[in-house]
Image (cartoon, rainbow, N blue to C red; front, side):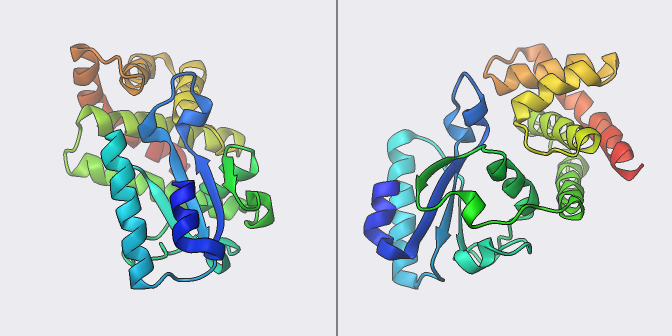
Length: 230
C-alpha cells in the first residue's frame, strides 16, 4: 500500500500510519491492522479511482477487508471529527480516541511525520463525546438484534474499553487488553462473557461461547451505559 500510494499521490501523500489491535497482540490479526492516510488536499476523481483500485488489488491478494481512512492535513490538525477525504458519508467519530492511541505510541509510521507533529492531544470532553458515540453504536446493534459472535465480541471488548477509560481516563488500550482489564476489575458475573469474547477474538470460539455472547451482549451493553451515565 505504501509503495502504491506513493506512486499515485507523490508529494500529496503527507503521512501513512498503521494502527489497530494487531500491534498489541502476540497473534497478529489482519483484520485488526488499520491504516490512516493524511493527504495534502482533497483528491480528484481520477486519483480516487486509482486509490480504490489499489485497495481492491491488495484485498483480493490477501483475502481481507482493509480498514483505511483518508483525511486532509488541514482536518487532521483540528479537533473536529474529520470527514473522509473522498467518502462524504463517513465522519471519524472516534477521532479523539484515535489521537490518544497515536500519541501514546500505538502506531507504526510508514511515511511522513509522526502523529505528534500533525495532531493535537484530545481533551477529556472530546474523549467523553467519543465514548458516547461508541455506546450509541453498540446500542444500535443491540436494538437491531444483531448478536452474532463478531458483533457481540466487539460490544463486550469495546464496552470494556469504555469502562477502562471511565476508570483511568486513558482510552489507549486495545480490545484484547481491555478484555484482560475487565477480567481483573469487573464483577465476577461478567467474567464468563468476557472470556467468551476473548476466545472468539483469538479465533478459538466454542459453541457455548457463541450462545453466551448472544445472550450476554444486551445486558453487558446496558451495564456499560449505566456506568457511562453516572
